[in-house]
Image (tube, rainbow, N blue to C red):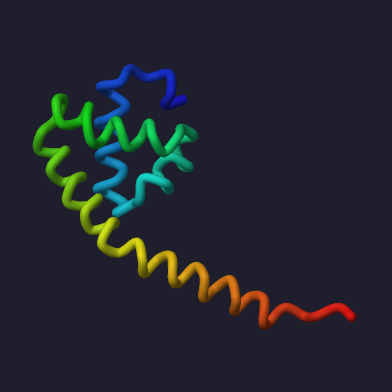
Length: 91
C-alpha cells in the first residue's frame, strides 16, 4: 500500500501519476487509498524539495485544475438533474 512507503517515494509516485493522467488531487487520493490532504501536501510541499522539475509540472497541472473546477462542478450538477429527470417515477 502506498501509505506504507516513505514520504519521498510517495510524493514522486503521486506527482508522476498526476502528470501522466492529468488527474485531480481527489482522484489520485481515491486511486491510492489515501486522503486528499496527504496527496496535496506531498505534491505541493514535499515534492518541491525532492524533485523540483516534477514539482513544477504538478504545479502547472494543479493551477489548470483550479481554473477548470467550476466547469467540472457545473457538469456534475447538470448530470445529476438530467439523471433525475430521466429516471422513471414511481407513483
